[in-house]
Amino acid sequence: MRIDAISIFPSYFDALELSLLGKAREKSLLEVNVHDLRDFTHDKHKTVDDSPYGGGAGMLMKPEPWGEALDAILPADGSATVIFTSPAGEVFKQATAQELSSANHLVFACGRYEGIDQRVVDYASTVANVRLISLGDYVLNGGEVAAIAMIEAIARLIPGVIGNADSLAEESHNDGLLEYPSYTKPASWRGLDVPEVLLSGNHAAIGKWRHEQQVERTKNVRPDLLEG
Ligand code: JFH
Image 1: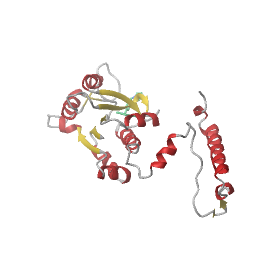
Image 2 (image 1 turned 90 degrees about the vertical axis):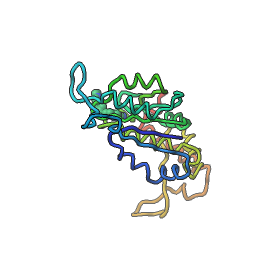
Image 3 (image 1 turned 45 degrees about the vertical axis):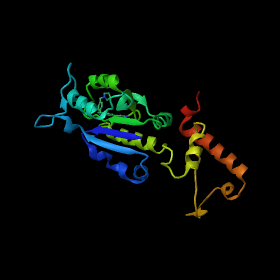
Image 4 (image 1 turned 180 degrees about the horizontal axis):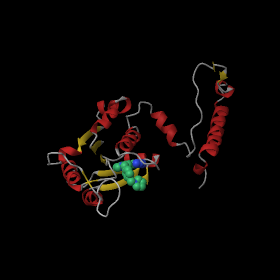
């Protein structure tokens, strides 16, 4: 998979060099290219923002640098998917990560200020597959943190990226429940004991206990996951 990210703060994406994604890139399963939007300006001050038509607080990102960046990065055959991270997008879910993990080429367009001139999205839709995606129902200062979270969630689903394939297989049949609590050695720590059943070697009993824990946790913390 090839991923491009366009941002006025490209160094945010340095985090992707670490651990998991670093390994994926070493193995050539993933190539990430980060672009500074200001490289696509032509004025002395590398201006990327302007005031909104119709009034309102704050500044918007002007369309011209975005148009030039997209023209430089997008393949001519329309095969790339451009993801605008946005508080106004569909909410990013594990199913979204799953779907995007089979793409060949993703381009993350990361806005700042109060967002990007709508015509950039409209133009991108004529030359690529476009998605507006929100990391969740809260407002960040820009699209970078959302893009990094999405890239990490997507990249770990690319076959070969995660060493232990069993981990992914286990995750995929979680039935929409929260995960069960997990324990490692020592069996007793600061007066807190690992639940007896996990030491029993009785795998049927362990499976039953873990499922009960999942249902209990989900009822308490995320009842919305049980409806429908
Ligand atoms: C982003 C920002 C919009 C104005 C609510 C009503 C009015 C600040 C680009 C994604 C998620 C983001 C995100 C993604 C891209 C950008 C900041 C946008 C407004 C807010 C204020 C600029 C934020 N899941 N959260 N935030 N901003 N809106």
